[in-house]
Length: 105
Image (cartoon, rainbow, N blue to C red; front, side, top):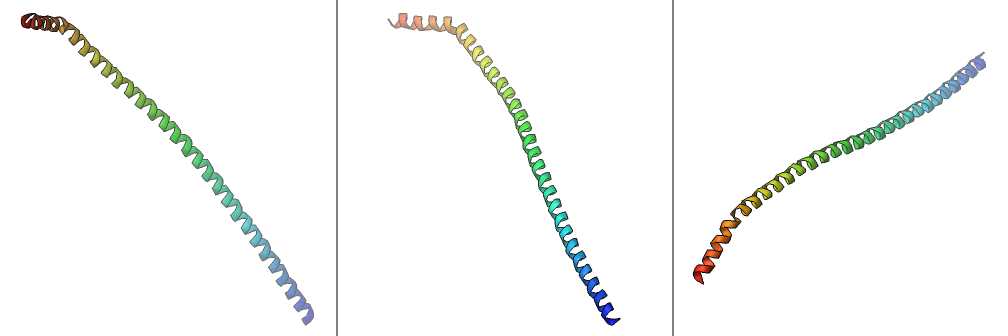
């Protein structure tokens, strides 16, 4: 009877050890799956951030180019106004220069 009980204890201990090993294996697999899921989420997040950043940069670039176009147009208009003023005064300037040349001989 004592021998039977010892065998039952040994069998129970062996079963407990097997259960512990199986639980450890399952726990490792769960941790590994969780880590893989986290890496996948991280990769997706990084990709989303890159895409969003590219979208924002593209939108900002479009705004900058639009603003630059306005500035260029303003500069062109200012130069054209200055040219018109110069053209209007060209006759007076020519007459003044001609008068000095004729007066100084």
